[in-house]
Image (cartoon, rainbow, N blue to C red; front, side, top):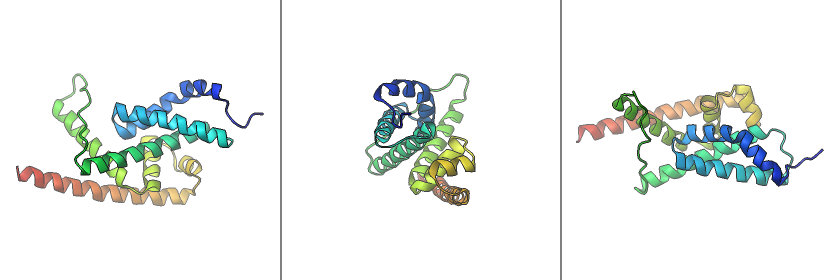
Length: 180
């Protein structure tokens, strides 16, 4: 029995698990360019890992790597935004959707992505796996190799920090609107 995946197996791996990786990356990043970069980085890292050690749970490894890479990109994006280096445009609008509702939803999604990028790594991973990948506490614990109780604590802390960050963002937005 082989313990390491052979290079030629990776085309099958990418075809089989590509949609899972893409969905995870895009849900977190909300941007095709960043999601594509994250997609590639995930599979490159997974290939490196598989060359060094036996991979027992390939889908779990891919989700964890994707989540980690996406959170890294969110942090990078937040640093760039703080320094005025980046401005992402709006995604194409869906037909039949009120443009104002769409702009508000995009703004809220942007604020949430930025807030997730400010969380400590463990809390960000737990939050994303729970609410974006819809994994159970047990699945998250198994995936991150932590206890179920630690999942609950990390999730509680993540939600509390996100509330604080989003509330502060709302105050800043309100002040900004009033000074215009």
